[in-house]
Amino acid sequence: MNWKKVWIYLLSFLLILYQVGMCVPIKVSASHMDMKNLLWSQEYSVYRAEKQYKKWMKDYPKCIQGIKEWRKINGKYSYPVTPYDKEWKNYIMSIERYVVCQIPQKILEELTTEELFELVLDCPMVTDICLYNSIEEGVKILAQNFNGMNELLSRLDCLEIITKYYESYNIPTKQQLDYDVLLGDTNHPDYNVIVKNENRMRKADKDAKVMNTLNICEAIFEIATDENILSQQEEEVLTKIVLQKNKEKMGSECVEGASTEIDQEDSILNRYLTKFSITSASSNKKGAAKSSGTFFQLSDNSKVYYTISKNKEAIANSTISQFLKRYEGIKLTNGEDAVTVAGGGGTKAYDCYNFAWLKKYDPANLWKKCVLGRDEPYRKYKYFKSASSPSGSGWVGSGRSHAVYVVKKEVSYRDNHGNVKFSPLVKSKWGQEGPLLQHPLTLSNYTNITQTSDLVWYC
Image (cartoon, rainbow, N blue to C red; front, side, top):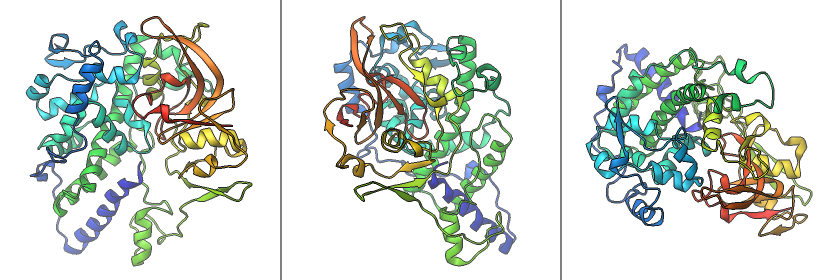
């Protein structure tokens, strides 16, 4: 969980004290959510995508799916092109796939907010929310690139509907697939047994949708908190709802890492308890000493600071399968799959900068469970040379949004027009919450979305 969610447990603790002291029960109901303001201003919101959508229509006219392409199945709209359709392979770049998923304005206007939310959950690109250092950040970026999410966050009744949906959402106790049996106990699982079997892949999608649903709802709660639009009563109600849902998570094998951070020594709650010398109701200790992280010392005496990640869960197999499905059928010219799993798929305990730089500079600490705060000391390290392109394996490419490690200077693959494309073959962690994959650089989900072109190469 993102550290920001700790506010939920802090509010809960205060609420418990209040209820014990006053002996007044509080009824938990989403009907208490009486939102009178937009999550973001209609006029000034940075998340609005109309201008970008118009630009995409001009730049990618062949990718736009008009109203005629959208159809209803069992009374609900479905996306014209998904990874299960052969046409999906015509759109290799992430930007093209985002354009393919844009919902026509006429359809957006006729959907209720709940119908819109369900359509957002079905978006083929929704798993991208885990490509960033927090799900909240991922939701915001998804809203920049997908007009369905943008429209959802602009609805007057967004928070009310999302709260009701979240409160009534029935978390499955069992996963659709037994991944241990299918993939075996190995660091190099063969995901093709899932990806190349449509029935299994659709079940994996259902497993992933459980986490996507909970993650998006909770991210919207966090955003609402950041925007300071909740009253105290609404915060209290939401606290109780999230705590109840957290109990339900504990009984489900579909949910990864569903545990509170209340006992983490460096949590906001423990710092609060230390400040006021209060003992936590769920912990026998008072606020423990804070350990916010440390640093790696380079030989030129510069320091690279890092923090210890709280969430050490493995990236879910269903999530990894979703990403691989997007690139199914795209081959290197030697016949091998273009995008494959590296390092068993990785965990949520480290980010792209950790993997790329520690693999290059300090492989002994490569799997240290930490997130690098910044990589400027590595960039300025006097023993590294830099260039505008890598000249071989072992180079690190690092930029404002992403870092990669070069496996091979150049490989080739065919684009959606059958043209041969050349690109470095790299390994990279797709966000702290995303998988560790090996892929041609230009087939990354970061391409055109977070400007992979800004990478500078170091060796």
